[in-house]
Image (cartoon, rainbow, N blue to C red):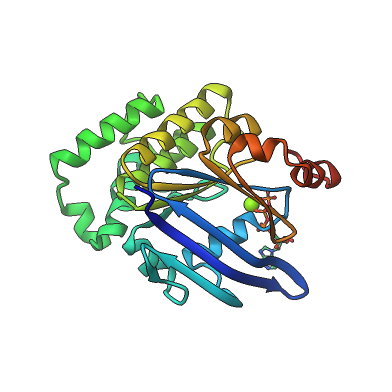
Length: 252
Ligand SMILES: Nc1ncnc2c1ncn2[C@@H]1O[C@H](COP(=O)(O)OP(=O)(O)OP(=O)(O)O)[C@@H](O)[C@H]1O
Ligand SMILES: [Mg+2]
């Protein structure tokens, strides 16, 4: 059952003189939540951007379900089944909650914008949506503008939207930042649901309690380098990891 969905192999990236990825290796298996942690500025978001194709690697390789995707543009990676959420939620702010969810899914399925406004979704879409909404704890009029939702709900909705597209791997960047305990718990439930259905999740998060509770494996970055890999218990007691967190000016 150990199936590698995503592999980052010997990846390097620098911006000017700043090295943000140095010989980075990481494997994400089907059915696992893989934590990607490290102090502020360690290169976590940069690595997600390299994986999803927003940035190009300077050198190294990225494989998705066994195929090399290192040089594919971001939209092609998304169509292959590489989903993501952003550190700050990204929606079409002028559109309703419903349109945002439907369009987010259609982007994966290659419908055009116009088609998706006039096309009908199947019953499956709505029953799945309902199920995810319940996990996310939502009760609202989904014809409302997306901006009418409080921040925490927007963040939860972004995960729901990513899941509705049925990606193989979802990259989530700080889904629990700014959320209260109950909302954080709902983020965990959604991510657990994703991996229970066979997806792989890469989770960047500073909320250590959440990371330690829900990650199956963790990769720790510091100054663009992998300084530790392992199970949560191993990471929590790793001296180099403790040093990296205590040594920097971070908020973890
Ligand atoms: N487009 C860019 N141009 C120049 N420098 C960049 C760019 N993107 C990131 N960096 C730099 O790369 C380094 C790593 O940034 P990154 O955002 O990946 O860190 P992070 O681990 O996600 O931090 P945080 O926990 O604060 O979100 C930082 O020094 C940042 O300033
Ligand atoms: Mg970041």
